[in-house]
Length: 230
Image (cartoon, rainbow, N blue to C red; front, top):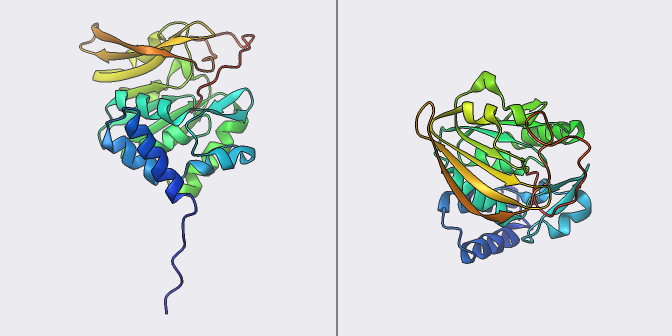
């Protein structure tokens, strides 16, 4: 006799979350399928594991949060990821966003400036067998060694669109980033049309933790918004 099949105690909650996101207007079935496969409970802080499938942002510690699932799904949909795309994530956070992109078949590179979160995410990627390339450092400068990227997603709020990120986009590449002040931002998608040309689109108001770095905010900025670091 074979061993009993292991039951996933979170499967129904995961399915219910995906159904909820579909009702909220998420139409990218590739994104929804990946979210139904990925165990979000592994990425939340242990104190909040019972809330892993609520559509809310949750604290990670270190003044960071794991983003609201709707925000993750919406931003990922804007990125228009295709299997094999090379994608750079700025702000590894919990690792959930990078893991989602990897499950979708992207070649993922991610940068995190908080050492403890960087280490935890690396261990989680290894545990899940996800080939995510990680870097500890200033994400506002991107990761030029692996450029150009088909997509760049920034999971923290910038005061402006960092020039290094624009320059690291491939032609036809998409950059999704929240831009604005410390308390609220507009979600922006930049699409590179040519070496010097970019199409610019806005997708409403969101609230993220600040992007700290040379091309972002100063480390002295302290705020407690309700959404992001992925």
